[in-house]
Structures are given as C-alpha cells and as structure tokens.
Amino acid sequence: MRTQLLITVLLFFTSLSFAQLGLSSFDVPVDAKSISMGESFVAVNDPLSSLMYNPASYNPNSGLSVSYSQRRANLVNDMNQFMYYNASVSYNSPIGEFAFLYNRLDWGTYDITAGSPAISGKTHLYDHLFLVKYSYPIADNLTCGVAIKTYNIIEVLTAGYSSAPMLETTSLPVLVDIGALYSKSLLPSDQDVKDKLTFGLSIQNYGSDFRQKGDLAIEFVRLPRYARIGFSYLLSTSPDKQSSPSILGVQISGEYRNLLNPLPSQGSERDYWGFGSELTVYELLSLRIGGDIMPYTGAYGNKGVPSVRYGVGIKFPFKYLGVNTPLRLHVGYAGIPLNSLVDYSFENAKATLQVFSLGVDYPLNNSNQ
Image (cartoon, rainbow, N blue to C red; front, side, top):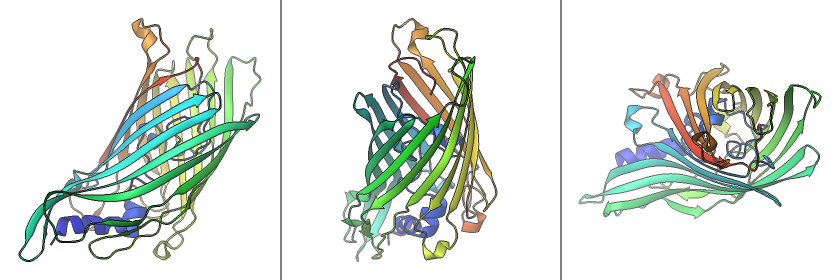
C-alpha cells in the first residue's frame, strides 16, 4: 500500500489538518513581514505583504515590487520535505495597482507500491494557489480592490508505474476576494512627525466549489471563507529633505478574522485575532513582533492564549553603493515558535518554523509606507 503518501493525504483532507495544522497553500501566508506581525495585515497598505489579507492595498509611489519567500512546513522531523514557496509581483500604474501571487506547498516525493503483484514507483504531491488583484482609489483616503484566484492539489507520478488511482480534480474553483482601505492622518501636516491611521475590511473566497477524489474516494469540497476587519497606525519622523530617510518609524496593527463556513466538527471555532508591531530605523532596519489568538489548540498555540512571532527586515537602497537608482533590496526573516504536538501523537516535533523573504522594489519616489 501507499502508506506514507496516504497518511499525508488523509492529514490534509481532514478538518484537523486544514484548519488546525494549516497544511495548505490556500490561506497560509508565506512572506516574513506579515507573519512576524501576527498575520494582522488587513489594514496594512503594503503592495506585496497584504495580498493574502486584503486586495485593496494601493500606494501611488510604490512603483514595481517583486518578492520571493520560503516557509518551512516541517512541523515534525518526518515532514522534512514539506516547504511553502511564494512569488509575488506588484505594479502601480496610472490606471491602478495590479499584483500577482503564487503560493505553493510542496509535499515532496514519496515511494509508492500498488497492485498485486506489487509494482513500485514514486509520486510527487503539491498544492498551489494563483491570485491576481486590482485596486484603485475611488475617493479621498478610500481605496477598493478585488482579487480573483484559483487553487488545486496535484499528484504527479515521477517514476515507475502504479495501477492505483491518482488524485483527480473534478471541479477547479474560481474565487473572489473584495476589500477596502480607509486612511486618515490625525496630526497636522506641519508637524515634525507624520502619521496615518488605516482601517481595513475584506471578504474572501466566495465562488465555486473545489472537488477532488483520492485513493480512498475522499471528496473534499470545503474551502474556508473569511471576513477580516482591522486597523493599522503608522507614526514616523519627517525627513529633513525629501530625499532623506525618516529617522524613526513605528507601526502597530490588529485584525479580527471570522471563519464564515466552519465545519460541523469545528463548532464555535471561528474567531481569530492577530496583532503586530514594527520599529524601523532610517528606513533600513525593522524589528518586528506580533502574535495571534486561535479558537482551538493546535500547532501554533493553545486555544484562547496569545502566541508570539518575531522577525527582522532589512531594506537596502542601491544608491548607498553609489548606484544612481531608487532600486531597493529587501530581506526578511520570521520565526514561528510551535506548540507541542503531543496531542496529535507525533514525535520529534519542531520548536520553531523559519521564514525567509527576498525582494526588490523600484519606488517612483521616496515615501514612508
């Protein structure tokens, strides 16, 4: 039997895996910035880090941004092949901000044995998400956005031959996210510091069903739908010159997320809270800390108890190397401490998951985001 692969597939297709262990590229963020700030980004106006939370992000000065991220998913040693990958691109044009996101959870390659007499082979399993978004300011301080996405799980036979049925997609979903951001400065514009208070709202994953059959005739039709609401507040010193960086910046964020279509087994487990903070010095070094409160006990914490994440980011302008360009390099790291997995009968549980991000952006002019 294809024991190892079947156990993996079964873990995914149960509500415990999808909702509590988070083994899916569908709604698990991969970028280091939002993860280290407690995934509380529904009201953070960031062209790339907010794509999994709210399609309404819009900054007329953001120009072109590109990023690549990796997030380990090996909650235990036996899952060392598991890895999340992300590639995102954002471009602010005269007609609005466009962005593309690709998330992938690679489950690795497994040996398989099927039939009688037994025939051996290898199979590669992964799932992935495609997202395209558009946003535009429809009024002073108010932007709206929409994202269209689809999701699939794929099994590929890479060696040998198997007479056992492979995973088969019978209905590929087309889903829509909509969102809005409202921003307002609270301090007078002539002050030595400037600020921005932002409120965000998004509704996610409305559309068609996803259906797929596996080796044990498992049919999975549920994709979680969310309503998110939250805020962010950015306070920074005003630079002496327009081309100079801000000396100090502080941002805090908070988010409430509601699972709109819980499974019967989840009961009242539908309320999620996230919070985060970031301290930035000279727009170069950012120190981040955040956390979340989950409605259940799982890999990332105990029910109703705040968990903690942390991280660091570096934003390095190429002009510091004597190159006459506004191009900037971004590097990010996040650490996710894990809860004990004893309740799930796993051994050799990991203590911390690692997240790494690398990106570049080409802003239209200097701006504090």
